[in-house]
Length: 244
Image (cartoon, rainbow, N blue to C red):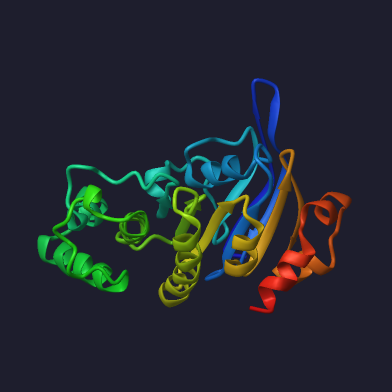
């Protein structure tokens, strides 16, 4: 496994946000953390990113323990739900931000920004500001900014939650294609079953801080491992999605 969570526990004021959480994600795969609100999805993502520290357990990337390594040194890209773009920076400057922090050469930064603008199909929009973009375009810029420093792992927290339904469907297909092209191992948080089923190679179902089941969309839907998964997953919705 490329990334592993081993018996992770995390409490906040006595609340078990993560309880003996263990799972792994293979290199190059796109995994979804799927579950209802309050099930511990975002806490897991934040611990992987180094934004929260587990009380016990180990986080490993390529076999290397990451618990004590600062988030900025983990080689992780993070796409936030609300884009988190800098309002007074152009699209190009937003994408370049992480590279400038790394003190890359100006010529290297320029080439990388142009490459990513091409990748997200926005090569003529580099001089625009976030307020001049649609929600879908802003999310593409956030994706490009996260990819700019060539992260080993990409984390996405409810990446489509702030976008309307039609654009969300379009972006789901776009995201799966882009991650496939780039080949970066990715984990995204969602409460939307259709989103997880359509995009993810692997689904990790969470409930009350625990992992209920790990499997492919087909395995999760047709072979639920617990009564929670059986009740939570909308099988007719999955079958309708597969018929599209």
